[in-house]
Figure 1 (cartoon, helix red, strand yellow):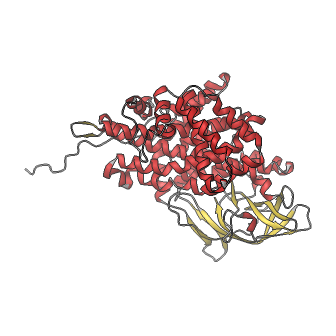
Figure 2: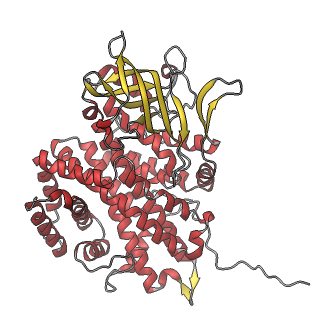
Figure 3: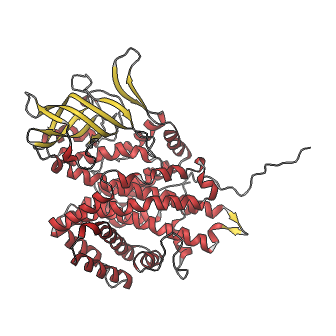
Length: 548
């Protein structure tokens, strides 16, 4: 009888069948911290249900299928008619339907709507980040549409609906609708004022026809799009419906789909307008001002999405090392691996804690919180999204060669990780926006300093970092060349303040030592060995509250 040559041992079970929300102690604690007591049972139950769905083997498989079967462009039907449609794998529609029904487009009219949606976005990103794009665009379109009360009254109930209707038909016949946007052009990129798409007024007040192109159109199968174009009085925001009220297709020519590094389940297109019907949103010549709230919402979603990706990367790394044996014991018990995992864990927790704090500020709506958001959102978007690729790559390395294999899921996280830093304004744009807030809105810095000042005296390293930041802010000569450094320091000090106030001592201690006190290296796994790293890793372990 032939002997066995393929006995499988020491392999890590898949991380499925657990509650993604409840197993994330930092996320659950942040939600509870910002919730009113009377909402706690409802919201935590809702998020735990989504967490169990997200952690199920079936939904995880949908995420893999959507990624492995990217969308396909169909410009014409079999008879030669121009249709300009994108075909998606059924898993994409299942995921998008779950996301809509979970309230990921319904923040604006619910108690603690932004907080509960933010937590759900972090959770749902861990299944498949691609479908976060149409969910984010739809959510963010609401404040822009409110520039026109009539448009808001017509569209907001559709955008905040918890019903996913995938059919292309007039929006007034649908129970729910999704939005995309088309802002950038070949020649301008982030410089949208260089746009050349022309808007010509039509006879009906507020209506126009558009002629031009867009280099990036997000979610091209959506029901409507926010578009920037040059009207007679200057750059203006427009609503372009995919299907007109009489049932005819608007002129919306999809030239090609982008072949992207990651985010492959989601379609991004180049689109041409040629006599395309549009409705003006806001005043002529005030396009940037009209969409500014939308931009703020999508930038916060970039922070949330990166926090979700980091959390999933860390969860996979800690899970693997908890089960994998090497050199006579569990990897998680090896001092050097424990240092790496703890370092990754504090980065993830800092991102989550900051992201949820900003979401709670959106719910508050007070002047102080709005001022804080004006400086904290671009700073957080700059820094958190920059840290995401480093976390994803290091976490994949924790799995060794297994982490380089597609079946592990880690390559998908690595490919997705740079996206949020690039989209919605890359690093330089965010850093310059921080400077703009400092120069034009004195209340923004005051709100920021009040926030971080709540932790003064609790940790000498944080106190020193605040003092150094104030010195940096006092010298604004040649500040543009230092804008990235300044944005980084603003984000780190805010993260440190939040962790000192709200995280377990071992987490705050590790963060302040390595990120603010200079007692850490440029790579992960260089935390001071005297810290309580075992407790930090245990807090990040995803199995602490598995689903039944």
